[in-house]
Amino acid sequence: MTTESTVRLRPATAEDRFLIRRWLSDPQVQSWWGTAASAEAEITLALASTAALPRIIERDDIPIGYAHAVEHGVWATRLPEGVPAGAWDIDYFVTPAAHDAPTGGVTLEMLTADVFATTLAVACSGLVSIRNEAAARAYERAGFRWLQVLQDPLLGPSWLMLKDRPA
Image (tube, rainbow, N blue to C red; front, side, top):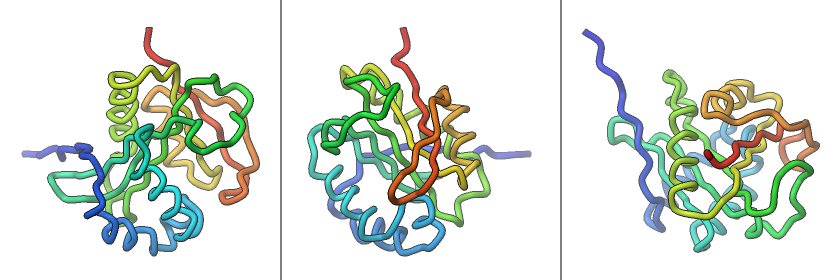
């Protein structure tokens, strides 16, 4: 008899900061999200913004990672070519210990569904390091398509992926 894991997203709160900080100290998480300081600054901005959906990823009620969706305007940068105005940026990580199950695709499906159900976002985009093929495949499973390769200052060469609002 096999039992399937249950993945869910819950709102991240200020009380989760120490848990997130511990996860960000892991070198493998840093290889996906950049330095702990830059990742923590990004997460702090998401937690403080009304134009963001910060989430803790839980599997079987155990916290295993972090995800957020943030309206691109919060980052105050120019949108990459191919990303429409009104798009939201999607990012996530799961702890290295939680990599034994395909949690990423489910997380991205739930988070994009949440964005499209609660905002006027026209699309969701994600930037994935070319060294993290598992994450790129998770974005694909969640319905994202490949747009281009960009040079990210923290991650280096990265795939830009986009998921349009369902019709």
